Length: 181
Image (cartoon, rainbow, N blue to C red):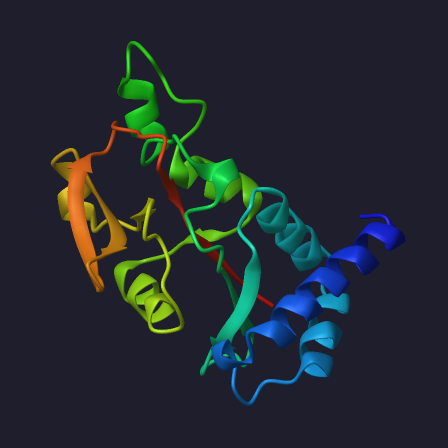
């Protein structure tokens, strides 16, 4: 990543970090910047999250490793990651009207992990997300083995978890991810 691009991204991340201090109490920007600058590969991942509309921000620290946890904090499911089915297997099973990609396939390319239900619900304690869209979440293997996949959204002041066929895709459904730095 070019130095100018890296500096611009760091400025964007810092502005978001400072604007949403309630998401990361007790964490200081100097520590965040130092960790990012020490991990150029993670800076590229954060850039990819930003470029696809994720608006990544720090939402905590991993208790075991001390790593900072960045999550997509865009108000709605990231625009550059919508209209995708759940995983590569579901994508391969579609014979007609295939989406461009799958949530798990795209997450792997970006270098992020898709949120699980617990992580998604934690994110929702930090603000109101997906009030008009929905986001695929990591689906337990037993549900996926039966052809299903899970997604979440916020409606009527509550966070809901639903199921759908893993091969389905909708213009208003994408996915949120996380990366640890």
